[in-house]
Length: 168
Image (cartoon, one colour):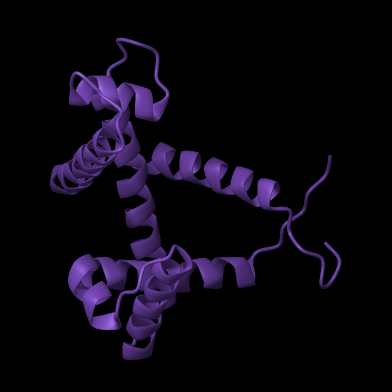
């Protein structure tokens, strides 16, 4: 890659997908508590989205019907199993990022934490919402914000220290 050359986003996304698959290959046991946490978060998100779409005039007979349509699955597919597989990816990624952070001595400072809050304040503002830092912190929770800050620092470290070679 030439100095100053930008990485094609599609290439980067492909690399991330491949890296996630590799991480899953190396995880031999998943902490069930973590799987349940992510699973419940997904279900809450699906319920919220179903309510939103219902408010917008779309009607679904059940959460099952909504989630299958929302995820673009075949009719009759087992969305719960699909969601559990997504949870495994999330947990494997989480384990990998925490292991990298520990091995590299990456810690979250107060500035990192505040930057993560500001990231979400700005993100919501770009979507037309006006939330204060305190509202974002209360709404997302300290654990989520710390996790985001950690992932950002690990991502930054990985990108800064990787050599990407791409050949068509």
